[in-house]
Length: 461
Image: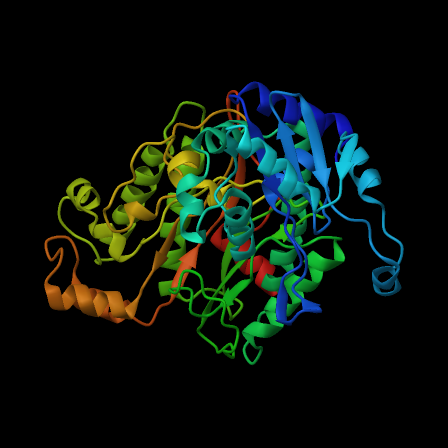
């Protein structure tokens, strides 16, 4: 945890930005995998961590805006529980670490909310993303579970987003610790890959490094020779000569801050000529996008710059043709780049995604409905204090190739005959984490190989 003053100051700022009523925060509980006592590794809710810091299950909190009170609700462990867990801090001790002096039993939350409702006071809460939270909010507020999303407070969503998008110096330092560990994960993956190894061997190694650093993974590891599947969490393939490997993995610190990097490298010691060509196109787009990161520049523009750069490289390979500006405007490049260039990163690897991309990445403006562009999570103008990812890629998806070819889609811009020779390629992506500064940007974390020669040198080490 940070110092108690950090959380006290954050709650005061939040309270000052909200109208009257109560702010309700539900911490996460343990979540069973296959029976009650066999739980997934506990991960506290990120907004709870931001305002209260305590990474323990079974807690809730209310900020009474009118009375100026903050109360944490929870129960101390019984002796039966201590037998299994060992001694744990009391709720009062945990609250004190967050600068909260008032606590109450978990059962008292219903009475507190009930009294506020009886007085006609507003109860502000964030959109629930866990089923048990949806049920609990419904019970507390007399709603059906289906109503809980619609009744969530947009005032609170906007207020939380307006604070969490700007990373303080102590947050940036914590994120950079996560990124440094993430670099070590990727260096290990690059060094060990070889024909005959399994994807699961590399996934296990990078997970080991994340756990050994005292935290965990910021998201499930993507370690695959089938990088054309964007979120491929299957690890059952055996690496073969001529394969290209995509590793997308990140560490999370004990405080919940994330790193997120992607590396692409050959299973052999060197790239094939075709792999080198594709990788260089991705690297050119990556470097162009990184160079464009500065305050005031809309991320949407940087995304389109990366798309245009990818299209130029693909035209050089004979895969795209025609007017590239028009091709990108119509979305023809999405045959190869179906996702967005990057996203916010912080306590969540896709920071605050549970609060809604339209608020986090678009400031309430509508998103595009165009295939590819609609998957851009972050489009708003960049500001100092934002931590973002830049991650262009090229993905050769056989099903997409077949469907668009059969439909005759974008034939003025895509050479389907030439593209057919790349249908077995897989995918390539390069990703780094950046802090937007007052005069530009800073790449976070230790340097990692990214040029063709650097990657090949790392593979031969």
